[in-house]
Image 1 (tube, rainbow, N blue to C red):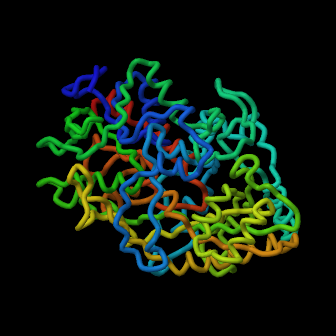
Image 2 (image 1 turned 90 degrees about the horizontal axis):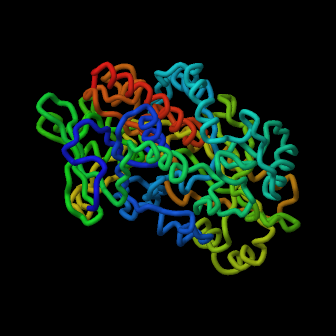
Image 3 (image 1 turned 60 degrees about the horizontal axis):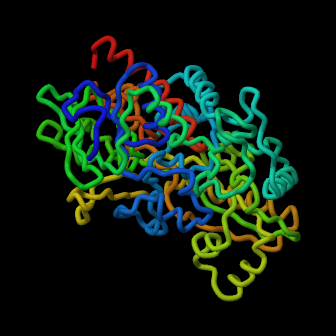
Length: 520
């Protein structure tokens, strides 16, 4: 295993599982407060040199290899969640869009009312308090359009989005708030518009815990990062407090790291799976699951891709992949026939990925036309609020196990009628946006996988209604915390990373206070 900074029997450390937006940020915040941490990451350690401008190659490097069972009814049965495996987690792969949840999204139950089949809940955190943490997270990440940081310039894909949006009467259009440097900052360069943001930023202009939070935590001397180490089970003592994490090291040997507290930030699918796989005599239905809510209320955002062949060349692959945003449809307006709202976000892909992954049903003359006119494509992704449903959930597979003998996750997700109505409206508006500029033809691409995994360990004031309290602390176990997007009660329409970072920063202060008070 090599030399360890902290011994396996050191029960004074905080063990953090997962090194992405939640876990990587939390590790740094705790270390800066003088708390010793062990950070377990199932994936490998990457460097900037490992990032390739090859969408399929990087998908093989990044995406978790074990596909979960999917018992969802058609048409969702081919989808799998995007869970990144590697130091930095999904901050390696994310687009950089760093958006706040809005007031109506934080109070979905009050804003939308009762909706049949939906398990709506209001966030138990005041919006004005969360706003303070959003501002701190934006400063940490260097989000454009906040503080004194200018927005990134718009590429041709953005110009199409902007002009088409204006034709439809939209007014809230910009290149969006991104955690991608628009000028040199924090020892990292400004974006040079090379594209391939989703394959890892080769120059480090995009914020990622890989080269921001984790190195800073290591510099304190209080962090030990253990890459290629897979958490298998969280164990507890006879007082029903977690006492450590059983994990498999890089050589496949099982090790037990003792802990003062454990923080789970493995992404919503794997975090729920870990709690369910940590069942014991005291917690027969899964760790911290007295409410029966672990794994439930899985959400992933309603999304589709819309591309259009424009009259003149666009070269939409040149420049930042997602520098473009229309926010006019984000509000709650029941006159449209659905609750919640959606965003139209500029996005681009390389030719092989566009033809083979996004539009797998396009063959023959249509495929030839698409390839021949690739330089004329413009593209966007619809991102809408996905209403939580109690039976949309992560469970343990009854048939498949991983290489360590533990059940893989199973996913069941049924589309709510509200999601269908929202997507129908959004698809029409997206298509009209391009048609207003003379688009020759449009392509609607179904989802290539479940994205922005959220829910499964939702926060609540009452232990009956969720898994964790407003600080991400498990109702059942005081020294067990959830530190990723699985604690979200609802998804909203915004990309979740900024919220995950803000919650991790907020949680770090709470954990430090609880440790000082000897409450954990």
